[in-house]
Structure formats: structure tokens, C-alpha cells
Length: 384
Image 1 (cartoon, rainbow, N blue to C red):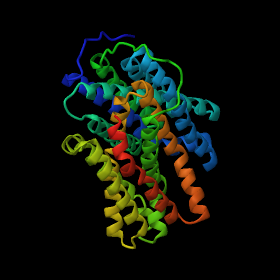
Image 2: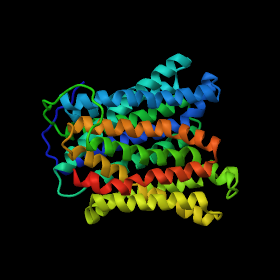
Image 3: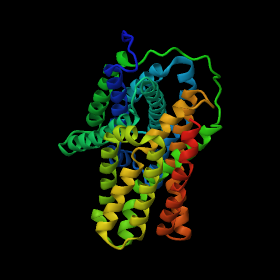
């Protein structure tokens, strides 16, 4: 299967559209996966521990694939990596609606995670190339499409399942839409020449190591709101169990809005101030959520975390793509891998800290960790 490619330049609207479609497809499939998880658990007869291992295998597949995808970007160009990752993800995803064996599902989820990781590195590296050829920031807008895709995927899958569609039909329909997005974007992606850079797996070094650390810290905050935010507000007695998810909902909406307008914000204030102010607002939001005894103030805190963190990761990816300590593709892969490591290991670490002290103390530790973002903002923007 091949698609005839036309040469597009980074400043063409078609190239930007293609990049947005890739981000949308990745977010859409990930959003579709969430409503299908209970059906997978029921079909396979998994307990909570078994389901936890299955979910962990998705992230593990991504983390393993990301460094390899960085090498592939160096040798084959970002378009091929983006397309292979997107096609593999879309073509394999329907299997989650049919597979009936635990081991087969485990292997399937690992591969899905691998293709998702490949797509993540490919599309972010491609976005760096597109932004580099533009006169204004674009990365936040690209990441906004990932968030919008997640909303659309989760909502679409929920509607299909609620209307009586089987998990297999739902997974197939979601995959078909994602496949269409990748096929439409394929001819319009940049046909970059492979670089003659070192092709071995390398650890982040120089300023990339600092960027990766800040990315992991920010992803850790996002993962904490997803996994522990509801428990935090319910344990404080602010809301009942049924309303525990209100905080993540506010956080998600605020993050999406922040990214939609993020490119204009970054263009107006610059990357350095975006990291400074974004980090400060995120820290303030964590403190409000953790220390307030009032639901209205807690709600403001969740919104502040979403708005503050919304453009930190896009800016860090842009900085990773423009530094000179490492090849661009490998740098983006290193930052993405470290960020996913924060999402995978962070919630477990919060659980250990909360068990030893309290959940409030664990969130205060997150606020302290996020202080690294404004503290190191000058360094990462000066050296890139």
C-alpha cells in the first residue's frame, strides 16, 4: 500500500493540517480505549491487579518503542515513522474488541502501545520541523488537537457502546476514523531527507536531560490529577464519590482551551515567560487543590493546573527540537520517553508517599517538584 507524496514545505497550510490530523488520530484512539477497558476486563475475567498489569503494558510498549522511533526518525525521516506508527495503531486497535485470551490481549496491547509511541515521537518530531519553518509558534495548537481527539474518541466510543454497539464494532469504527485521518495526512507530511546522524540508542544529555526532567515533572502532575485527583477531593469531604471526577473534567477542559490559544500566548510572551508563568500558575493550582477546604476554591485550583500546565510540554518539545546537544529526532524521543516514564511511575510513587504520610503531603511534594520548571526556565531557553 502506498500513497503518492507531493513535496510540501513547512509553511504550507496542508502540512500543518497533516500534522494536526496525526495528533488528532493519536488522541482519538487513546480516548476510544478508555471506555472499552471495562469490557476488556469483563471479557477476560481479570481482577484489578490483572487489569493494572494490562494497562501498564500499554505504557511499557510505548516507552520501549520511543527510543527506537527516535533512531528511525534519524535514518528514515519523520514522515515514515509517523505513518507507520499511525497505520499500525489504527489497523491493530480493532483487536481489543475481539481478543479473548489474556496472553493474546497482553501482546496486542503491548504492540498498540509500541505503535502509539512510534506515532508520538514521529508526529512531535515532524511538528518540530513544521514549527521550525514557520515564523510563529505552532506546537501548542498541535497538542490541542491531541486533547480534542481524546475528548472525541472517549465521547464517540461511549455513545456507540451506550446505543448497543458491541466492543468489536466500536473499536473498529474508532480505528476506521483514525485510519482515515492518517491516510489523509500521509501525502501532505514533509518528505524530509534522512539525516546522517548517529543511529544508536543514547540517553538524554546536556540540555536535553534538563528538558526531559521538566517534561517528566509536568507529565507527573497530569497523571496525578487523572489517578489521584478524585480521591483527593473526596477524602477532603468536598464532594461525594459520584462527583469525584469533576476536578479532572475541569482540568481537561482548561488544558484544551489553554492549548488552543497557546500558540498566540507563546508568540506574545516567549518560551521563557511561558515556562515561568505556566509553572507558577500550576504550582498555585496544586496548592489551592491541596490546602483549600472549599469546593469553589478547589475548582479554581483544577482550572489553574490545566491552564498552567497546558503549554509547558509543547514548549519543551519545541526546545528539544531546536537544541544542538543531540540530534533532533533522538532528543524528542528522549523527552517523550522520560515524560511517559513520569506518567507510568509517578502515580505509583504518589501512592507510596501517600501511604507513608498523606495524600495532601504527596500533592505538596508535586508542587515542590514543579518549582523546577520556573527555576530552570532561564537555563533551558538560554541554551536553546
